[in-house]
Image 1 (tube, helix red, strand yellow):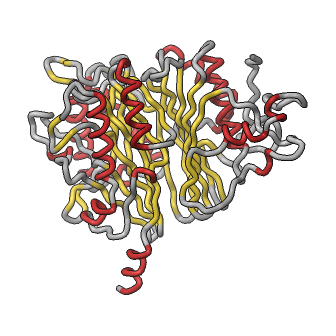
Image 2 (image 1 turned 90 degrees about the vertical axis):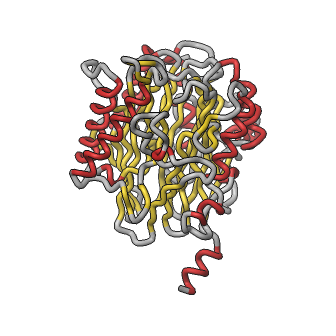
Image 3 (image 1 turned 180 degrees about the horizontal axis):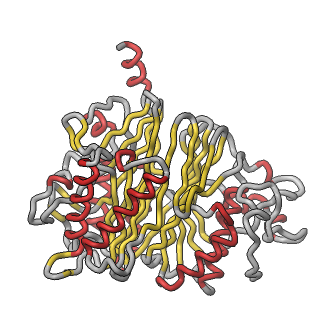
Length: 472
């Protein structure tokens, strides 16, 4: 493989020029357009009734995308004039980490080149087998993306298939979309009166030794970067917390419990400063979140925030009717309860985006089906299904909104024990169908939980709801 990397100014994502992977006259891809079209076709095309965009694969093949070197799944979500692509990229599993990373980036580029509008990668999460491989990936991304490196998390959660890495990436494009990169690991996206801010890669310095100090330092840095981008924690809809040794003791207290204590103290401080409202109306209001383990003893934190003056935008935290809200857990689970919502629904006009927090096999507040990976996976998916259901949206005062499992655009599945991977995957594939998915090995926030799943769903508000609004 040619490992030389051209800067992004020479090979911009979404351009109309061929990359180094251009096929020769006699290559299999040029001889078999249908095979390439099949591999490049989205696993899901959501909220759109448009036809196939693969017409450029016919004819003489002058615009043939590069041959895909990775297993890939992606969803194309088309909301009016803006398109989103959720990509789950997994290399074949052989070769050095730099080879696998380059194969993954090349595959992302090939997918984005086929889109009908130029696309920009705004965020990515890199799941690594080894912590020391992060530096190689950083150098490759810097060479490829130049000044437009996406907001990036490097998480030591080995891909369950044995690869050196896997990448989840989000890309955006369309009329009026303005993407800015104001500082490293901070990306803003503005369109149609909306301004999204993605912040990633927040890691405390070595001087923060305890779990509480690590969380306190990371949250303070996250708030500072939000402020630099003109936002605050009042705008945050989703957070991700990756904690090393999540269930391990530290001075007799589980590290995750200390993270929860620091998060609660931080939120209280933000509220006292007028930068966060954790009570809106009569309901508690916390971002959706994932708190999941990773290798080592560190911490990585990221968030997604939304700002708008539009009157047709509504944020609604969701709770599962069969689960106690995490922020109401008894002190036996944590001295200060985990402050997050089970999901955050973002209603924008006629569309709903539901960010689903890390979800596990919990009923009420107790872990169930201990030791059984298949039943825990089933219960976890059942919890997600109930959480995003139209019935649950109606419980929260949003008649006509809601989603179903086929409305999921992608999921991450965190599997605690490597030997459970195949059984867990079989259940997910049976219940969820074709869906962009990354499976990563990670400890869950309770030692008796074997699997955790998070995701995002896209759906439309039903005609019934819109009719009732016109009648009002």
